[in-house]
Length: 282
Image 1 (cartoon, one colour):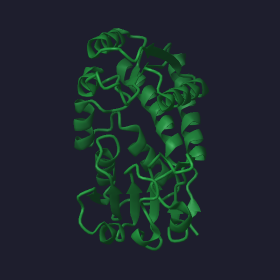
Image 2 (cartoon, one colour; image 1 turned 60 degrees about the vertical axis):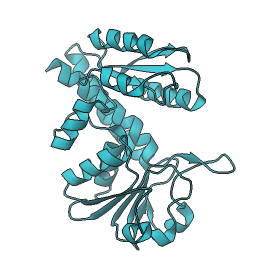
Image 3 (cartoon, one colour; image 1 turned 180 degrees about the horizontal axis):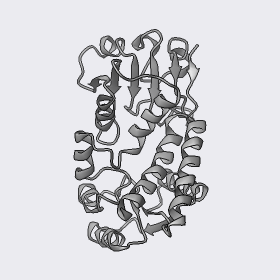
């Protein structure tokens, strides 16, 4: 049976460390501040934003919510972002995705100042990630690295397979694993003989967003399995991409859903906000 990777406990340790950094910054007269923009009333987005506000409270980061109508246009949102870019008291800006259909997501991501881009989606931060510059890094992939480190699980020389090639998880995850000398394969919907590829993985990371996609016959005996998926099953219950009950019997370590990667994403957002505040005052 696999050892469960406790994302809640690791996220708590990260947030405690962030709180200490916030105290140090406050001694220098700097209060890190995160501005979160939410458009419309999507229940999932509201839950995410509330979780971020709670994490800010727990770490001493000032949180500023800008709630906009679901009819907001691209131009109106760009005006809000420009104001926040110019506001020296705001160190991190996050626009809760997905955005309503009428808003051009690419324009919005490009408009956020790279120094305040705590999601690390801006092209400049993506480029820095590819160059191996330790600047602001995408929250979910960097959270996965922290989980592996916390449990003393080596990446160097290991076969690492990522299922999913999104800009938010799959691609940056590949870069972070490469920086740690992992041998990385990115599999996706057009990959031939997926089972043969996942079956060679020492570290298997699934980020496809399909409930029960990863089954035991896709997993090598003793593999480390990281489930990034957040889905709802037919009963409406929260679940990941991995068939947890069957894969747990084969893996050496496994993340649950909920309580695995999810809490790490929010914790790393707090880490990025403090890092952004430090960078802006250097």
